[in-house]
Length: 219
Picture (cartoon, rainbow, N blue to C red):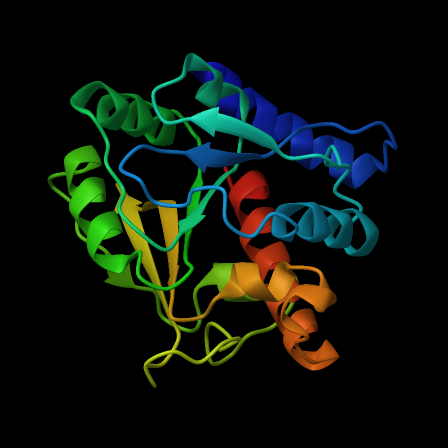
């Protein structure tokens, strides 16, 4: 488990020293329940490219896929989860994810519309004692590189609700960030997929870069 913490430290120092060899990989979380965990196929590669160019983060250009219950989960300092539908964690998967997060890992959940009730239900299996809390706009995650003084940017409109950023906080440490009603992942996609404006795409990518940088450099 300690290798997550060591990996995060290695990422910080290699990012600072400008080493060109890719220093770490990130992964998309594969889960059961029938939901489309594989949604937004171009989003993570584009976010990685943006982070490597703008923040010199030296991330491997191709994302990995990791299952919730896999021991391989512990090799990634940052794991991304998205989708539209049902999510289901078994007891052992919930325990594995909990151990990963308590060992220094970080989970970003991005609601791609329709994920909310299932995410809240399943993350209660992971942390029965915690509930999602909305992060204040002055939280360091919103300012780790790019400044978002009003919180999450709204990329796509669905139900007229504001974009909100929620977190699970364990003993003062943010272990999971949940972006709700923002559709960040859609904003990371190739422009041909959604034809978003350059301004919207830049906001989405900048916010994603903030999340990733915060996740790998704070701990």
